[in-house]
Length: 205
Image (cartoon, helix red, strand yellow):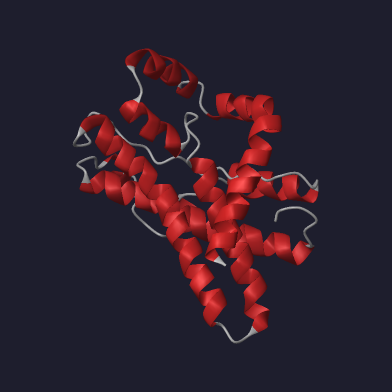
């Protein structure tokens, strides 16, 4: 879906990305606040204002450059800060907070799919399909159990302590570790993620 894109399609994807990332991060902050951690709330992150959540370089410029180079885009926003010691239910509460973000993207994809089926104007179909594709990609990518992605928090909740320690060490390196892992595993992960994305899109459509 993200290959051989026209200029207008890239613009639609970037607008979709800004909107979708804003809801994704706001959902993290909202759920964390409901679970007892006000860290993100105190920083003004419980908001749908995308300017509070995007990083101009990682959220907009990086995926734009990758798409222009005919490469799969990487979608990264400003992480929502949270204090795991303040969230109720410990690691399970942190897992719920983390998964809430990708789930919000899946909900947006479902809404877009419903609108595609209902709209009588074909001019709206392509933007809706691209919007849906962005949100499915955000859902699938963020559910990878690789720190600091959201799926790693779900994995933390059930992983044995030795694996948790390794994951903490990876997470301490931030997005540099994530990018290195993705580069090393891209020949394996790329086709798997593409197939999962395609399967979800076909199901929704």
